[in-house]
Image 1: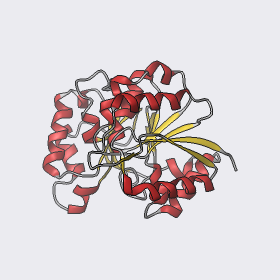
Image 2 (image 1 turned 90 degrees about the vertical axis):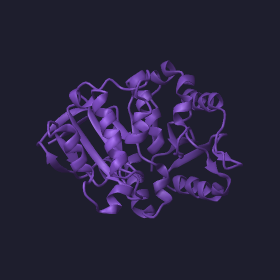
Image 3 (image 1 turned 120 degrees about the vertical axis):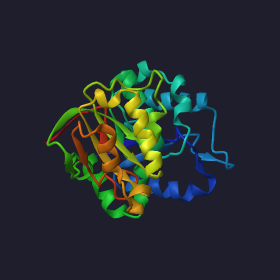
Image 4 (image 1 turned 180 degrees about the horizontal axis):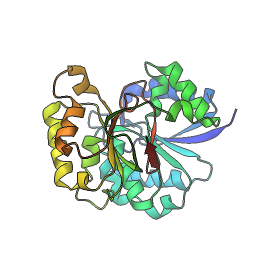
Length: 281
């Protein structure tokens, strides 16, 4: 079994103080598959206001990037705050590192900023899945990946809604958090990209608003296609229009569109690399 060292950070909202046992369980589970955890200083907040100084969080993140004994960085947070740290990150140092950053949800903002500023890929995946409702299958997937088999964690099925092929570097992730980058220096160049979209919360009205913003940014005129993951709240409503219909309306059916049920916020979700070429056919 291969062995690795991983930093655990919270670049978005800190975990609640009552989650310490859960994170200890995560560390123990990672240890069982050969990944030794190194906890960051800003994982837990003592109050409901789960925020730390963004400059200090960015500094800690950079220390983990500089630490030659650390092989990867797992962000175990989510929420709202990851875009606070973006101005305080040294992207040149990240560009010289071979470490991969892993996170999901609100970390979409940081993941895409890293790609925009460094052209480095990151993994859209929450490592806490290995202690979630589907812990057994998720632990096996992660174990196989770190022992050289990418398929279990990164191969996901999809269906075509419109078109039959698309190719381009994948950008995006959580739609709300991706749009926080709009109008900033951290928003990716969308030309010839594949836009990955998923969400936890939000009904059809909110998704329509987000899609309108993407259209007004000129995104749909530049990208090569869209890959939809799951939209947890909207999907649970089983109402019409669903997300595929909303996207078809917003893009007027002019873009290739594929749908996967294996990328998103659910406990059985698989991983996708943001900032790496994706070919679907």
